[in-house]
Length: 130
Image (cartoon, rainbow, N blue to C red; front, side, top):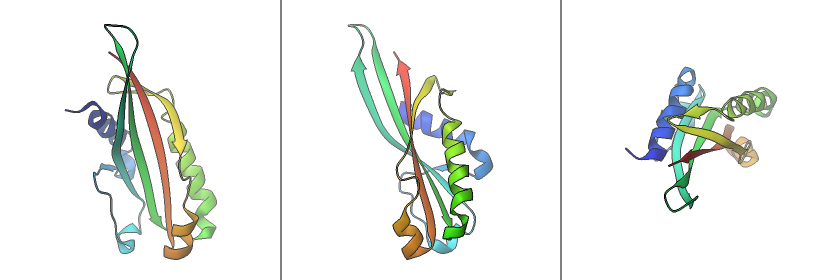
């Protein structure tokens, strides 16, 4: 199994109380978003040489949080998403350590305004030495 897919599965496992699932094409209808939907997507793998016999792998996954919502719910949803993201920093999963947590976007004003949908994406970077 691909290393980035292993990380994605491990991240989804950590978020099982939110019914997170690994998806390759996360698309939802607004009617499906009454409850928070959490999608984990394998994003990228980078390799950097450390020596002739070892290399570093940076494995990236994105976690999408989607929920029907309004502006009044934004402070609570942002607090939840920020806390979940920071919970991964320095965490070791599937043999790799989370070295970076980025929120991009922390929320989408366009989705909130145009669709009444809260959308937030966390990008996690995991480092593995081989």
